Length: 108
Image: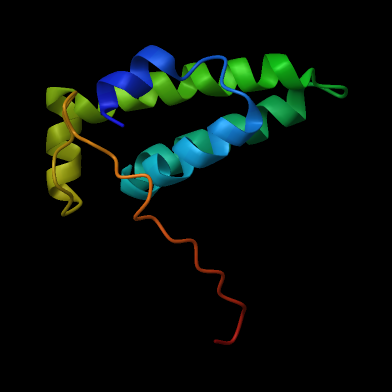
């Protein structure tokens, strides 16, 4: 899936589709973006006692899109370069099938 497709289609995915497509995307995003997304989640959960899951997903999708747009911007290219990462563009293809999730336990 291309970055441009993520920007166009991300909002409204069900949980299974989100898991399938966002996990590989997270693997190629910078640590800055991953930390931003985690902090957004923490702030959301701290602000709402009984958070509406649908509203939470919508808010997180909006933050994903904001971060993704920053990653492909000229500023994002510079940040990624400084972090030793290849630049992302609207045409960058995220390969869904090639991402493996490896769980590591403490002490290994």
